[in-house]
Each structure stands twice: as structure tokens, then as C-alpha cells.
Image (cartoon, rainbow over all chains, first blue to last red; front, side):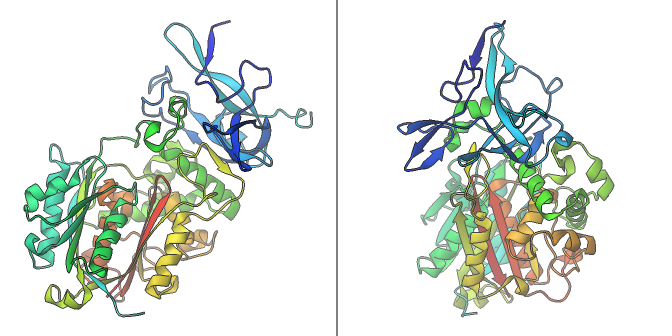
Length: 138
Length: 383
């Protein structure tokens, strides 16, 4: 098992088998990412896909710090997942094929490596994964 | 309509594109000189100037070229709405009696490729950039993909918009992209952000534009065919509008700042969308132009499909949109882009647009900007 670190502290709960995004709340208004000085609130793990697209070219680097190159870059999908009663949160999706995504489908927060540092450490981000058929009512 | 207060009496443009070692300031000075010549006047008559740029952090340096006359000169940067903002500030200076003659000038010189930077410049955390989310382009794919599903818009309509703008660019002598492409070539080009392909996007580039404004009652001393600025409105986003660079959005939605700026401009001008005869709408990508047709009140959500199929936004159609090819054919030097729209609209209203002249002697023109971090500028011009 390679050494793993989150891309930043305070974005999602980690380590955890059921990671949650860390938001904050003031006067009933939620913010993600969490704002300093506000009360921390953990968001629901599941929601529905609200909007999406794909990223087909390697983002300008910096700020992107993936260990890939323009040639080896693997496109990903991204978009917003609506967490009921909370927020629509933007993130990368684990499924990169737009034909396998549809608005309204159930999605779940997962934590996945998106790059590996030269010393072998994997850097983790949150992402949204489609909830597999049969698990949707779990 | 009430009596006009502000006139546009001169417009100038340095072609957008790639210009080697030529500096942004030099392009800006050439555009300014062209606008002054168009107004039949000279820089010493100008009493205030508003100068927009992204890459030149101190754009008032342009006075080194134009003349050290000591007038107030203000630098302007307001994202993709910069050109509309400098125009609005110059118009306000005239309307408020601070200047009889004012200029709005814009120039930029962007490196190739998508706009980028450090997330901290807009107050976002570093991780947002590290994982590949700090980009403007994917917002446009996300918004139009959802919009197409909700309102029944086809990929062919996206390609149709880009094809129309490239055709208009082909007949615009100063445009950057002057090669028409077919709907098929555009649709089948590489996907950038699903469903948007390479030829559906504009590119950052280089160029400049400038406008001379004056008190409406002085207009005829400069121009035999003045154009009046009936409204110039700027709006920022409200909570719940769907904007670029948003790691999260509240569940309660609000209209885009385009809708707010557009409504304010119609109200100020005393005109409605049915009065507009030529429009320049922010086409960062083909999807944006489609969405902006509805957000600016020209059609209902979903009607774009029919409009594009019928050619309603072509030169000669019911409402010609982006007659010089828009951003798709001209690229986007941020500081200048909105003033290019004014340049094109003034030429159209004065019957000086050559091969791309809108028929029927148009008298009402409309310009619209939208961009990061969620700002929109709308102007309405009449002859």
C-alpha cells in the first residue's frame, strides 16, 4: 500500500471508509469549501447529478499538479452533484464517459488518488462516483 | 425614449489576432488614434479616459503614446466585462458633467491556450487548482450541456452558431479567423469540454479597440452620423446564479447577471428586445451565444433550435447576431473585446460595415458581455 496524503486538510474526512465533504455554516447558509471561523458541517455522502461536462485536455500547470503530460493525460468528467437540502458541489467524477452519465443519476462521494509524487506518495482528492445498480437503495 | 445624453462619435480598432513582438500598449495607441481620427479630433480634446487591460497592470501608461496632457486616466479590469465597464465609466463621466469628451480604450496580449492563473487570485484554495478544477472552459461545457437537456437544443445548433460566426469572420476584413468551416467539420472536431468541440470555442489573443464619447448636444460638431448610447449597464452575480469558478452553488437559484444587466438596459433605454435590429452577444463558445439569446430576452429558452435552423441570427435574418464573427472569429483580448462589439455596432448603425452590412438600415444595436467571475455588461445604441 503506497503512502497516501489528502490534497489539502479540511476538504474531506480522511482516513475514512465513508468519507464526507467538510462544509461550514453561518446563519443557516452552507459554504463549501468551509470558511474560516464558521461552524463545521459534514455534508451528505449521496446526491443526484445536476450538471456535467468533460475535461479533455490537460489543465494549465500550475496550478494543476497531475504527474501526467499533455500526451498521457486521461480525460475526466466533472460537474455538480446536488446534495439534498444542502448544496450543489462541484467535483471530478470517477466515470469519464459522458454517455454513461445522466442528469438525475445517484452519485456518491469517494476519495481517490489523482496523482503520484516523485517519492511514490499518492495524492488524494474527493470525487463523485455513480452509485452502482442495486446499491441505490442501500 | 427620452433625449439622449451621451453620443459615440468615433470608433477605432487594432485587428485582433497574433502580432509578434508588438506590445499591447502600442496596439492600444493605434486603436485610440483611429478612434480620434474617426471623430475628426485629437487627444488634447479628451478630458477623461478609462483604459482596460488584463496583462498591462498599469494601462494608463498609454498616455506616453497619446500625449501627457494631465487628464484623469483610470485603469479598468473587470474580467470579461472589462470593455463594457470602461465604456460605462466613460459614459457616466460625460453624463455627470465631468467631461464633455471622454474615451474608453482597451487592449490585451494573452499567451496561447486557456486562461489560467493561481486560484488565490479569485479567493479560491490551492487544492481547487491542483486537482484540475480551476479553469474557465469547463464551466461553459457544464452550463450548455445541462441547458441542452432541459430545453431540447441539438449539437447541430451549437455547430450552426460556430459556422455562422466563422462565415461572418470570412467577410470581415479585420477578423482573425477568416476561414469558414462546415457544420460537420465543427461538430466532428476534437471535443474540448463535452459537448463543446475545438471550433465551437473562442481563443485568447491580442488586439485593441477604442471609442470616443461626448455630450449628445456636442455630437454633431464631431460626426455627421453620431450614434447615441441609450444604456450601458453592468451587473455582478447574485446568490444562486450559476457561475464560473464555483466549488459549490446554493440550492436556491437566481438568474444570470446577464438577465439583470439586460433588463436594466432595456428599462434605461426605453426599448425592448423586439426593437433591436443587430446584436453582439458574448460567444466565448457557441453554447454561450445560444444561452445569451434567451438571457438577453430575444427568444424563449429552447426557441434557439428553431432560430438557428431558420437562419434567424444570420446577417439578413430576423436578428443578426455577431455580425463580425464575434469572439469565435476574433478571439478575446479581454480589455478590448467589449469595445470591438461597440466598434462593430457603430459601423452597422452608420451603414459602414461593407460586405457584412445588415440590410434594412438598422437603427438600434445591442452589445452584451459575460464572463468570470460572474459579471455582465449590456449596452444599447441607437442612431
